Length: 638
Image (cartoon, rainbow, N blue to C red; front, side):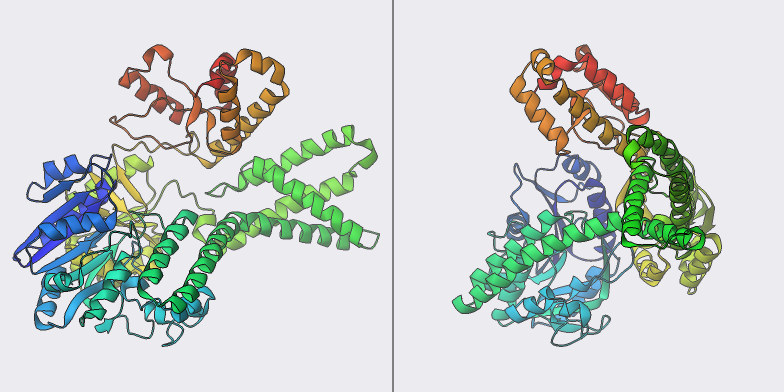
């Protein structure tokens, strides 16, 4: 056997199916076998492999044994000259395996090899080529010099930024997402270290390959898509701790005591800095619009007072403006001014709420009355500033803040007429309608100027998504076009040859998934906000009525546990009934203390599914309140 492809899977069934489809096309004419090691997935991955890929050698583990151990299971079972460790959220071009095997055959010094990887937007993934994370390299990355000087031989060594993106070269560290290995080398230096559950094992093995006298190579002639983060979400704080803990294991294993202590300090510093950075960036992403609105409202109030006021503006007046601005932001937020997609009408609703709220405030706070001129200035400032901010962001083409409704997406399908028709029909159903629908033929998609033609159509028609029909286009052609079109900013999706689903960087769309119109759905931004407000209001009411509440609930300890879980956003007072496999997948929400399924129907899957779908489609906060009032005794259930 020349090559064994090893894929470790955990609950990414659709991505695994796509990956296996591309792998089967890529091993044509090559003596190769394919292993899938499943780490106790619960999404039907094992059944899918058995039904659709009977030639795949499946190892179905009865527990999640981790990435390293699972790969080692298949490596030991393989008798091939080369093995490749491949993530399930990858797309492999038809020529990848042939090119790599030819290169390894003529480069006996190469013990390991990595290919050029792009993500789901067509952008180059810098981890395709990496340097050894020595204390100095780690230090430069932690303090930000790597980002400031990415192409420096000294400061940019973490991703070897000084090496050209499209030239083959020896490197130090390979990526575990796609890692070609010579079996003879593994026999000499050992398999993956199973003390690494996830992350770090690729660094450890790459380092041992170089210590064994072999070379690791970066080979950009072979290119794949890696939907980075579908197997593991890499933007979370939890990822930071898991990743850097793996780095600590690596440092303890390979560096001297003195260097290990130094690197250990750097790693611990990285954990807290990276975790803090992730939290700050998440806050800034969510707070950008309110902060701009705050500055805009204060600025417009100041301008109004400067132009039309008689008294000079002092520090006290500025404080008043800041308080007014905060009140305006709260009113706007309650009315959906910060929902995505942006709707200008919600700003008007917020202003109307303030127009109603100010007289009420004056009636209960006569000693701190808001003058009519100030009230008019505040409401005017809210409307002018908030609409102005959104117009600026829309003009700057910041897509999350676009004023064009994104409910009806504009889609370009590339493939044969029949496949384009099916892809657009599927998207139309999952999106509840589309905007502009444009098509390009197979011949146009394969033409030398295809990328230029797609760019022209994207600009002319304001395209949001480009869908490639994999039945009509080669996988390698799709990868090439995505890389060429990365600067367009559109979302790339791939319609599968089976016509069952369409895959994007962060989405899997099929008729088995329930995509509900945003303005009615329980998972819409407005509904999430309303549901959270209702949860807190119910929690407050239950506390105010505490003596009576404790007499009614069945289990007082569980009631307090549930109450605290709702406050901490771990639960909602009302959620779905027991979730089981059914014909449709519903949008996920927080687990509920109560559910809308009648008690006598909890064991009937059809009734449970209908109740859950109805709740998801027709959510209303007063229904939650009504159910809580009718089921007070059940609020203390575990």
